[in-house]
Length: 260
Image 1: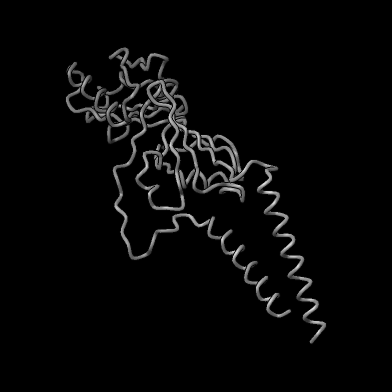
Image 2 (image 1 turned 135 degrees about the vertical axis):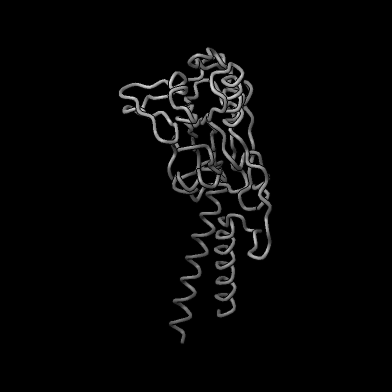
């Protein structure tokens, strides 16, 4: 009886330990090893993006025509144009053709560009027109968001400031993965150049750092695939086996205790 009890106990411990290992993120990452940081994915501007664009320079008066402001306007010592109504100041929506209608310069095509590239483009146009000798152009997303679906504890669409978001940060913000999630099959659905592409990530390994989907892009969809469909025969069988092992182990424990 003792041998049977010991065998059942070992089997139960093995099943439990295997289940825990399934939820180890970056399981092959060690403290002593170094992992190079690859070039960060740069989000590209798309149609319907909302951008905040500010132009400043050493002579504040020259920058005023390039800033769309409402309410009272002031100029800081650094040459930045400020408005009393900052919510809608200097904001531009990218139209269906990928253009923005910018003061003085007119329509500028920005779709497909990174924020840095768009900033350089506007800066060059201002300089080429001899409007400002050395302008400073800053651009940021006003509506950068992503969606998390599937086997997570908080499905939904999340908005963030800036565009520096990793898939791990996105999962954490959604309340982490649920017990049904398959850590080897996390999908990131991305739309680019009129096409949708799916990147499958295994977040148990450090290979995730090299994926182009490690850093999220605007409007990415993260889908945590479940291990098995709900109500599948395999899941039910495993559940019954676990219950049976637990019951037999408990019965053996009682029998062994009574015989002592």
